[in-house]
Image (cartoon, rainbow, N blue to C red):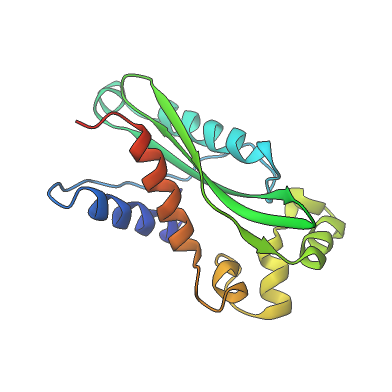
Length: 171
């Protein structure tokens, strides 16, 4: 992704997990093939596709030397409503891959229904945009608005990144 919040989250997670090493983190905007607002299993599918598309744009040398990490937020049905979670997908140079789903932040049902109801539905609108319109804050970080800063999107991203990295073999 070219998203500053995602790139910063990757850098922070790596610094927290492996403070003795320096990593070169490069953001790359590639398609996930998902709607603007992924729902349920389409979230992990989008993360996988985004990672594959990023891998396909790498040189042969880059494919041998670097891992690809993809982050995709989506909404998941839970009892009585919806919550936003981040799916992290990691592909290592040897082709092995891992995924991890973060804990969620409950999104207001009326905001989910509004995003879905708008012309173009989830294909063109995110619940985060509706939350920002109704409650203020940043459409990229409705988590902060909804939790009064107790949980930020960056915190959620870092959780997902640490979770997926913990699944990978340590070298």
